[in-house]
Length: 110
Image (cartoon, rainbow, N blue to C red; front, side, top):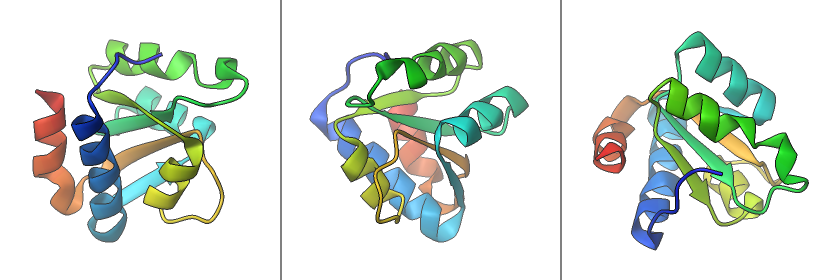
């Protein structure tokens, strides 16, 4: 999976997703995340650490690293779904237009 990150970084990733949802554009789900990475439109990727089976998201951190896009492994798919503003769990989310989350993404990237 993606590299281990601090709780603070995970919170910033959730915040970035929430802000981008309101002021930019996000996509949810493994297929949408993969397409955004391949097209070069991804700004930040979040992957749930409890994805089951883990094989469904294993390629995302590798693809993100190849495309030099920050990829954060968050705790649960439920929290990721909530941050993305949906009532169901999701195993991956990508920010494709940062909106006002640009500065948060820059912080995470460091």
